[in-house]
Length: 472
Image (cartoon, rainbow, N blue to C red; front, side, top):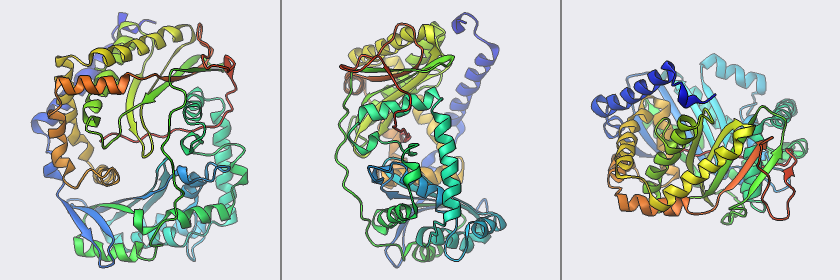
């Protein structure tokens, strides 16, 4: 079906609603700088947190992050970090898994952990009146995890079932293959969630060793939002985190050099649609051209209904329901990433359009009109990232991790507003001027692997992984 030939009323309604929402934010929304009065709280023991006090709702949201995510997995055992994240709340101190989760449920406390390539994260949500109990459960999980046999085997079975499902998922295969091909000799090329070969090898000692090396005070970042004052928070910081090891024992991670720019790898999988994942080198987060590149990417593929990729691939040619690109600045590599899915007999046409649009914006940059519309949207929609305590806490943690400064929220829109057409053209050439690695999963007509020395088709079982870090 050619989507451009019959624009649905639902699509039109969604577009109008989205535009009105952005306009309302610009016209009436509370500016993020006014909504987030950030206090830097330092405990007597020297532990720092950023606090936004909000007494309008009797809740407290806490986000924490430690340097060292899946890149700290043993080379032969990818998946250790994600295994730790899944089992850290499965019993701690004197509480086994059932008792620990019973306390969480009894107190209405939300506690979870997750990992990405460079960082290990924790999330705590609780009512104001359950503050002490909530922080105590977090303290136990971080300082005294049990890693008992029963939850380890239960989580192992769940992970193995997920990995088995992913062997038939074109999206998962394309993503994993992209990372393993781009970074074959680097930690970024390993599968974040483990492999069917590595997960059976992971034991309690591996989990304990990872937790001991990574969960430490010197790399800890903390964001707190809710009904708690600075003095009380300072006490909780020392009580919760004060007994963690002073320094992490992280393995050094070298810069990641992308190995396969300009290549295409095709995987034969009998599925109705063909998935395409593409990516190339990006611009580091601390580079002066990052903000211009962020605006350029909105024009290219970051705008939900307004991007060039959406217009060309979906509206004009009806090739896909969704196509997008995003910036992924990691600690040891910076990337431009994207993906779409289409019919097998239209895959070659879809990829050709995507590559042409990326080449065109690299050569000419965005138009003046595109630049101004992108800047207006990115500035106006920023307030939507601060409409809940959880979102505010997440933004505060991300700003700390990226070392953007405690005043970044006040400065951010000014940085976007200052982007000129010359800045955008320069950033576009840097961002989009290199070669892409493309992984294709399905049975695409007219597309084959172009990797030198590789067969045209690759087994879908090869390990790799993917994760995304939102731009700020």
